[in-house]
Image 1 (cartoon, rainbow, N blue to C red):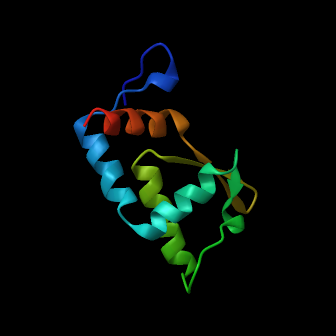
Image 2 (image 1 turned 90 degrees about the vertical axis):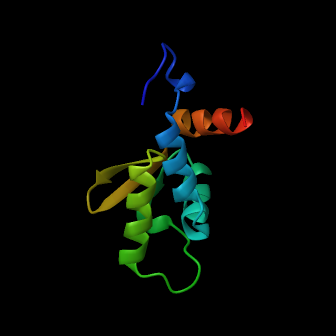
Length: 99
């Protein structure tokens, strides 16, 4: 991802934009992203997942969000601290506005 002098002005490639769009197309991933975005940081164990979602499925969704560049995960002891990469989210929104 290329960044200008201000990291809040990141620019996405078309491939990055499409990868984020594919990732967000899944309703569960989008719901997880909304929870992460509502906090400065969120422990993985604090995710409120609806329905019967196994830990492996949650892990898969988090990995997809990370690979798309939307979420950073940092290990804190036995848990993971999740953060929205707001500069990437803002770049995605700007890209959508240009359509």
